Image: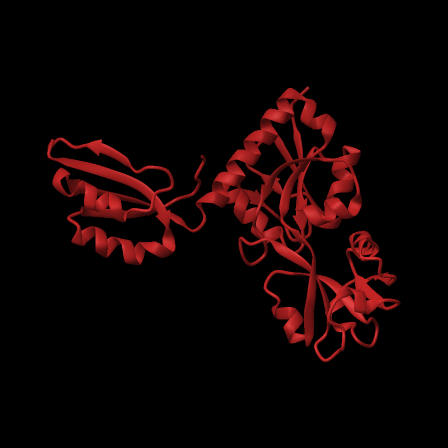
Length: 291
């Protein structure tokens, strides 16, 4: 039987960022706006677009072998899936997102305990119930179908909502009073699928390459030549991922130096390298960094 890995991709806000990540990792995914079955340039993978909120269910049931979803929805589902690796990327940034408890900015509420007997609107119902139960606060948690930020104070007293920057909450005149949980994207797998040697190897390769693409973001490679008499000065300037690679040139008095550094530091580092005696300085982009 032909080997196939059934891969679930998150439909919605993370869809474009996920497809872009796969492209940097080496897989081109082509999503037709009307189809839930994008094509991919890997004959060993079949893709399906699934809402992140439902991904853990279909991975747990075995309809999918592996999928990408937030750890928040895995925890919310309470299902038993293998978490293969963290993939810290979001719609707008590489930061984790937060589920926060927010109240109207002019309300008297300052902490979760002030919300006893109040109504809390959220999509993350079970996590929110457990959060308040752990604090001994009795609340009524109502499922929100969307537009959660507009519900206080008329339809709810407070909300538990996901935020990346907090700008949407501020725009709706809401004030954060606590963080309920942090979340990030995870590559999750069906337990039986991950026991299959071929599928495990394929899933581990996916994890390796996706993480390599994430780790390369915001970093660049730098190559330069320097005379041996100035090598110590040049190395003192370079912030390296590990240790710079140093290679001897045909002129035995010179060496080539190869390293990786944060893209934001390049504008300060290159002039200092030049002043320290480096020549032939070349900056180049990175697609993947695999440690």
